[in-house]
Image (cartoon, rainbow over all chains, first blue to last red):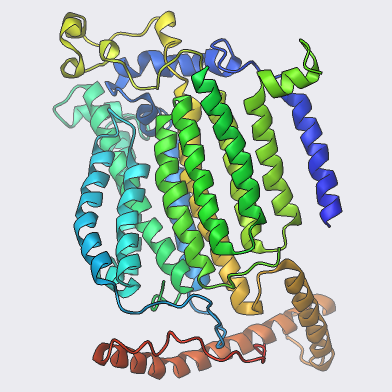
Length: 249
Length: 82
Length: 235
């Protein structure tokens, strides 16, 4: 098996190394990917279309909003699948865990976490809301928010974290995120545009079409943040306890 | 030139760390080294100008995915055969 | 060896970045094929994935370009601009010139890869959950042990298959598929029975441990590793 693997890998390596010679040189501004009209359009007219300074956020939530919506759905379905794979089913009775866990939560660790967690959560909100003008957005803010709950579970135990964010509420929040995203898309459809065409939201709200796109992007990012927060915590909770949802890491 | 040297250093470290994380037998150590790999990747992306991707990798790759890997190994056998 | 235009110069000097991506990709591929432990295979999969993401991000790099966030002079909002550019911002945001476009890194690969990273961790979690489920069923995540146990299970099932042959499903049309269905239905039935058993059994101990942990939290009653039983799970 190992010999076959080495042969296959070396063969593919030779082919790829041959292909590398045809790539444009490093950082070439006239490379095909950089000189394509789509990328140039995104760079040149994002400011006019949406008034968002961060082009990545604009492309993510507006120009390619349909793509991002279904990426969020993929994250949601993955979380659902993890929980449903691990829940139920026959279990082994003899479990030889090699980690020895001190059951008592440590005083210094818990008090430090007590101080840190609010800061992490405020930072997560900042990252989410400030994603238009600086690096950040729904995915990063959501993961940071989920990490704060994971930190609670790591420093106390999983029961403490699940008391604050139960698993069924996780999935309610995750589904709510997708509903927010799709709802903004549907709302712009009912106002005469196409699905996720945020400019038509200006007909219902007292803003210019550009600012409608700006603020609809914020709403969409909040939806993404909800889903990612909940799914990251659900992932950790089920994987660390093998689906039991008690005596975890 | 300085930036190129930085680039080359990180790229060679990446290869070393990737091989090391597959070579180590203890799966927890392997997961932690994989976190280091993600962090180096994040530095490389920040240097390339992809700040959003670097931020995502810092939170997801170096943060959550390491924790999730260790949480899984907690429920499995810690030692790998190879 | 390193003279101008030779293949080594092209690979190792001019296109070192791309060459390292190929090496990372091959490390990941090799781990996915040759490593024995499933967790190691998954780490290999992640390395493979990051190599591809690295390639995508690097085709958006432009020499001398800045990050894809508008500089103050192109900022659509006047309040973010510095004082000397205020007069330009009053007239509203404008479409950038071609020369200005080449001053920003290409944002499109970043967007594609940003979502790929988050979906990557979700799929990694899914794969790890399948690993946990395999460990629950077979007690190992090593590939060779797993194949051995699967073979044993297959031979055991084939032995049971002959015994259960007289059981016929009324709706079966083809003999062979009907028999296979009978086996599978038998298996799932026994699984279900085991589950029900387990549920009824596990309820009372769970309550007991909870009450004990609340009354006396210091005692790590369930934490102590139990003596290992050599008996395998029967199903």
